[in-house]
Structure formats: structure tokens, C-alpha cells
Amino acid sequence: MDKYATRLVIPPAMPRSPGAVSDRVDFYTIGVRQFRQRILPPGLPATTVWGYGSTRHPRTFHYPAFTIEARSGTPVRVRWQNQLRDREGRYLPHLLPVDPTLHWANPPGGIPARDSRPAFRSTPGPYTGPVPIVTHLHGGRNTEESDGYTEAWYLPDALDLPAGYAAVGSYYEEFKNKFEDLFGDAWGRGDAVFQYTNEGRASTLWFHDHALGVTRLNVYAGLAGFYLLRGGPADLPEGVLPGPAPRPGDPPGRKYHEIPIVIQDRSFHADGSLSYPSGRVAFDGFKGPYIPDSDIPPIWNPEFFGNTMVANGRTWPLLHVEARRYRFRFLNGCNSRYLSLKIVTHPLARRPAHPALPFWQIGSEGGFLPAPVQRDHLLIAPAERMDVVVDFASVPVGTGLYLINEGPDTAFGGGTAGTDFPPADPATTGQVMKLVVGAPTAPDTSVPPAQLSLPAFEPLKEAGRVRRLSLSEQNSDSLPHIGPRQLLLGTLDRNGVAVPMRWDDPVTENPAVGATEIWEIHNFTKDAHPIHIHETQFQVLDRLRADRTVRPAEPWERGFKDTVVAYPGVATRLKATFDRPGRYVWHCHMLEHEDNEMMRPYDVG
Picture (spheres, one colour):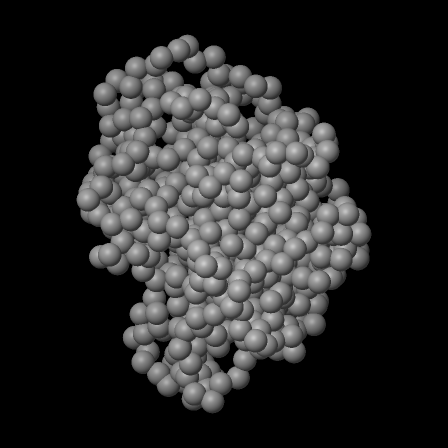
């Protein structure tokens, strides 16, 4: 595959639906559809993917989605429609192999057995029925009926839904009724309506699918997009940072100096289709016996690492920049891969490479940091976002630079590239993008990052409780040398021993409304896990090692976050305020882990 043969796609703004609900709400109707898209370089086949788009604007369907531009204090209401149907209205099966032995949405179980782990008399093949979806606004602070709760999924409104199938998840009706009571906007067959308050700080959010047990596959198929919240007291005036960014109604060819970039690893078949493992044998060579003759799922893989890097839906793209400052909003959208990004002068430079330009990080998931942080590389866990400024003004016109990745091609356990783990393959997954520097076309009036004064940062109040939580993995009970078979969250007992729990065990985290708590997350596994808590933005306090030494939060972790790296053998401590009553989830954002028990519900109230 040729590298740098296609230009980076800069996602346009998602068009709003005409006829807004009111002057005080932005309304969207966004569907999920299947289509073909140019992801591979010219000369290779197009790829069938899933993506979001405005149902009134068919050309907006894209992977990744067009960006939702939101304004502080102005709610956004989205009707999310599952349109995974063919032209005749029949449901479309999944593009990828669905393991029906997990605890998952399980539509074939009907109302009594939906959202469960079904039993089998013989090892099943992949599920081929209609696909459940539900969209989560990652990083938002909203009420439960608009969270995209993993058991509030729904199937498409297809003509041929099989008799006896559950068409919606266990919480769909409850949240439907609550939403209609609150807002008077009815949900329909194959859709759900969510309202986002946009009361938080200006920040880089994103939306993606969150259906129980198939999140890894739905996101891999293409269901993700940016949601940028602007304005309010925690934003900067226009012109202080590099811009503009895409806006609704922009003319073709407009130059952008603020660019969101989602980086993902993917693999492809020779016909251009997405490649994802169809069985456990791809992970560790284990050929069975599988469920029900053992406790090992036949299809699920504990992690996934693709051999191709994709940025904004293109493999190894090219971006022309001017000799001026740019604002990049990076999102790690990989299923399992950690990224360690660096800008260098040669794509095959010896790893670890010497950086050609620094990043100035100005924000994380919850908005701006207390102060800019200069960094030579960015370690980004799955689901983390980093808002950075890069200054190309000193680079000679015509220079080619490269965004590379020095993260590992396997699960990340901490440490540094070249010392604690081999970096990604320099010829493939070690490269991400090429940047070619051109002459500036207009003066750069943005403020140099070292001189930026960022919005005031108010830390959370004192915590009233400490919860001790655990991360564990379990091997097979019948074949102890095979593992992991599932990953688990849980609590600690009085002796500091992990008490692992599954998705359907009783809720153990139940903060009072308005409570501020410290969550102390003890990692008993060998992997670093990106832990995400829904509908709250927290502060990372520190990390407590086994020898009782304390490492403070890193400078780039000292703003608000919604995802934190929990390193192995360490207790990661964070502080959060829970001001939204309802039922939510917390989980590992390595999607293969999340889909096999490394997710737990929590109740506020």
C-alpha cells in the first residue's frame, strides 16, 4: 500500500436539521448507514463501512462522521436513527464477526433473555441478525436517558426482523418514557432522541456506538465522530488560538488551521473490506474446545492491533500545512492500541526518534489545562484526547515532516519506547501522516503557545469518601493455561484483595447526588487500562505504587479528564463530583475488554 498518496480529510461540520425545536436548541437527525468509502490509496478497492450522517443530507454520511459543532449553554437534541437496512428495507447483518457467547445485547433471546449471556449446546458461529446500536456522547455531562446507556440499544426498523427477537434493550423503554415526559419529543421505531445540555467547559468530545457486547465491532466498522463544544467562560476569544475550524456553510476550498484528527489502526482484506479476527485462534493459537465445552469464547479476542494506520478515514494521509501555527485536536480512536506521537524529519528514523518540533498541549478531555505544557511526544490511550498547538513557522518551505507513532504493537504496560517495549513497526504502524510545509498565505495573528494565558481552572471541592476499586483478568477455569477469558472490574476487600465482579452483579458504586469522591483504582493486571467514567469530568490526583511512593499527576493530566491511564501494579487516584442522578457506567476503553465484562453500572442518587 502506498503511503501519503491521499490527502487528509478534514471533517466538515454536521448540518443541522431545518426547523429547529426552538430558538434555544440545535436539532439534528443523524442516521447510521452502510456505504462504500475510499479509505485505501488510489488503485485499491473501496471499503464498505458504517458511518453517521444527516438523514436530510445523504452526502454527509462518512467515516468518521462530520463534526457536531455545539455552543456552551445551547442544548443539542439529536434523533439517532438505526438505518442499517438495505434498499428494500431488510436488515443488514454485521460487517464483522459477532461472538454470541458473550454477555451482550442478545436480540435473539427476546424480552426475557435480552442483555444476557446465552447458553449453547454446541459452539455457535457468528451472529448474523439485525444489529443493535446506541450512541454515547463521550465526555458529555447529561442525564441518564441521554447517556447512550449500553442496555438502551435498538434494532433498525426493518421489514424482516425475526419473530421473537427483542427490538430494544432492557432500559430503552424506561429512558424513552422519561425523555418524552421531560421534553415532549417522542422516540420512534429504530431510533432514540437524546438531548445534550452543553453545560460543561469548552472541550473536545466525541460520539460513538456503545451497544452491549458489540461496541468493539460497531466502532471498528466506523461509528465515531467529533463533538466540539465551544464558548462559555472556560473558552478563549476567537483569534487567540489558530483557526478557523470547519463551520456549517463553509465554501469549498477554505483553509483550516484548527483540525480534529482521529487516529485508528485497521486491517484490510485484498478486496478492500475491513479485516477483523473471526476466531480466538488469531490471538493465541488456541483451537478449542470453546464454549460450551470450555469457558473460552470462540470468536472474541482479548485485544486487537491492526497493521495499517488510518487518520480521519484515510490510510497514511498527507496534509499540506503553512509555515504558521496550527491547532490539532487528537483523538485515539483505536480499539486497543496506545499511541505515542512524535513529529520527525524522516519516516524511518531510528526509534526512539529525535523530535523535529514540539507539541504544546493546551487541553485534555475536559477542556483547557491550567497552563500550556511543552512536550516532545504525546502518549495517548484509547479514547483520550489531546488539544495541541504546533508551530511550523521555523520550518523551511517545502520541508516534509512526519507524524510517527512509537507506541507498541501489542498491549501497553507502561514505560518508554526502546527501553521498556519495542516501538511500533517503523515501516507500517510506526507511521501516521506526512505534513508538507508551504508558504503562509496570510499573517498568523494567533498567540504563541508559550505566551498563552488559559481560562481559569477551578479544582473540585474536598472529597467526602474514598472508594477502592480493582482491575483484574481471569484465565479459563477448565484450562488454566488459556487466558484471559474475560477482564473484570470490582472492589477491594479489607485486606486489599481484589473482589472481581461482572456486568450483572449488584451495583457497588452509588454516590449521592452532588457527592465528591476519590476513586482509587488498583490494577492487578499486566496491562495499562484506560478507565472512562460516564457523565462526569474528574481530576487525576496521583498514583500510589506498591512501595507506597506517590507519583503526582503528570502536568498534562492536571485539567479535567474523563479517561485515565491506570498502570499495572499501581493505584491510580482520581477525584470526581457526581451531580447527575441516574444509572451510568464506568469501564475500560480498550473496547475488546469493555465488551467482555470490563464494564460496570454505577448509580448516582
